[in-house]
Image (cartoon, rainbow, N blue to C red; front, side, top):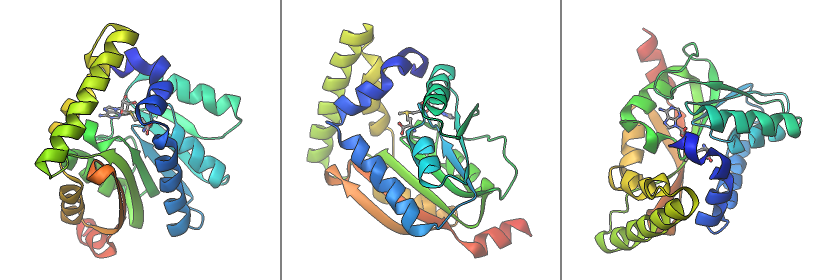
Length: 232
Ligand SMILES: C[S@@+](CC[C@H](N)C(=O)[O-])C[C@H]1O[C@@H](n2cnc3c(N)ncnc32)[C@H](O)[C@@H]1O
């Protein structure tokens, strides 16, 4: 599906979020700067067209930044943007649940609207915990399933309608963007993600909630004791 929408992904994200996506991503990158002075290796999982990877490399020009995604067309747009802006981020094809990266390599992992797309968040979190170094950082931005039933119905219902209409108008495929609502219904709440992070050895440092918990930015670090225990 992301192969189909790749050409219009950036425009869609801007329109669908009423421009807020830019501010949320900027906030995530500001959070990264606040907690990491100069991270040498940063991975951007499910990087799409590269917003976070390119933003990170602009912020930390000496960092080695690699974006991974499974959709060839999303990656080719990311590479094109990197070339056009002379931003030295690199991009490669890989599944976020099985990364071609050695254990304990990354100082920070970024995940924009990423973990929700894994078959199960646990698969992604386990892999992130594997590739992060001791004390390494995970910053995620994503949609979540609001716990409040009334707000969930309104929020998910609006996204379903708006997504289906846009998908039909732009691609004659309602599911192209309607999938967002379905993926939220099958996803966890932001509170559950915090608990899952703790289960996988992360310390949640901060959660910034948007849209009554329908969107959240988590900033977490991999507990050093957990890394030592898994290394033994
Ligand atoms: C909503 S886009 C997010 C793109 C970008 N991170 C952003 O913040 O704009 C989701 C991306 O996840 C990718 N994706 C889906 N499943 C994946 C997987 N298992 N491993 C890696 N990428 C995946 C899709 O190809 C798509 O580019």
